[in-house]
Image (spheres, rainbow, N blue to C red):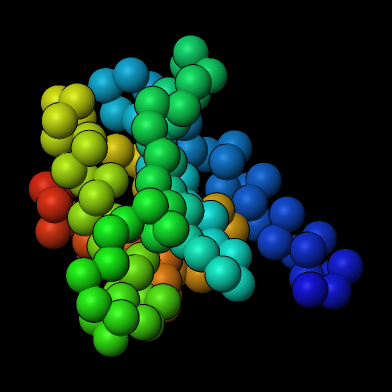
Amino acid sequence: MSNQKRQLRSRRQHRIRTKIKGTAQRPRLSVYRSNYATYAQVIDDVSGKTLFAVDDRQIKKTSQKEMSAKCAKAYEVGKTIGKQAADKNIKQVVFDRGGYRYHGRVKCLADGARAAGLEF
């Protein structure tokens, strides 16, 4: 990734983070995507702690064909993080897309989390 792309993403990320804050009742669902994996974590910004995190390397693969697409893996990450949030009685979160456009893996992760019962 070029230096200019990193700077632009950093600016977008900073602009988004000034507006979005997570609390204990409504924590922040933060998304990070690399070329290899998709990561999501639920963060309480007031106490400055990560409540729990999931990435697609932790998800048990049922079959190689089923888990081959990155978007399918991101959807499973969203479903898993939604289930963990439900276990901790968290129903609402603030979605932090991390400076990425809302499409592709980021959108699939959000759809998976909504399917598991999280509200944005």
